[in-house]
Amino acid sequence: MRTQALILSLASALLLVACGSAPPGRAPSVSVLSSGQSSDIAIHAMGLVGTPYRWGGNTPDSGFDCSGLIGYVYRHRAGVTPPRTVAQLAGFGEPVDAGELRTGDLVIFGDDPAWHAGIYVGEGRFVHAPSTGGTVRLDRLDNRYWARQPVRFRRL
Image (cartoon, rainbow, N blue to C red; front, side):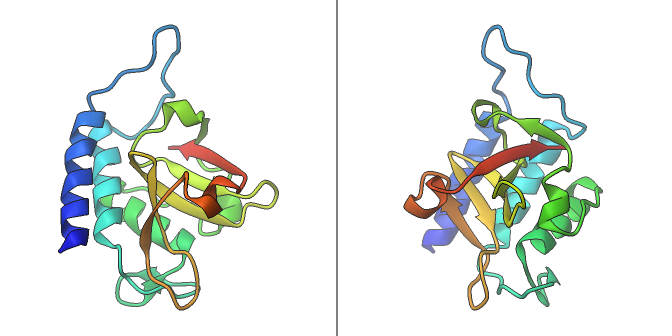
């Protein structure tokens, strides 16, 4: 019940975020995705929270690893097939400054090589498939663990 309330709360926030604009004097990052597609990506990712982790997994039935989750959501909500590995995702799309993040952007952890990825869903949160024995989950970028990791952001 609490997860459903959180998803509804974030979905409402996504609708408000979609109406935002870039700060004065800064050009927004260009995206090939519409704001509606970006919101759909985030909402769909949140709906997969709780799906089991499986290395190499790329469907809700088989489970997901982090790049499999991203590929599944992008294919089904934007018609885009991203690269399959985290190392390849690190070069997918265009770089985005942390201050310009919007829903649907990729969150990439690790410098070189990148070792983990998720989907930004707004309000400082991202959805990811973290590890064997776990499930797809919603975490905060400012969480004690994630805040200490090198992170970069990408937008299609």
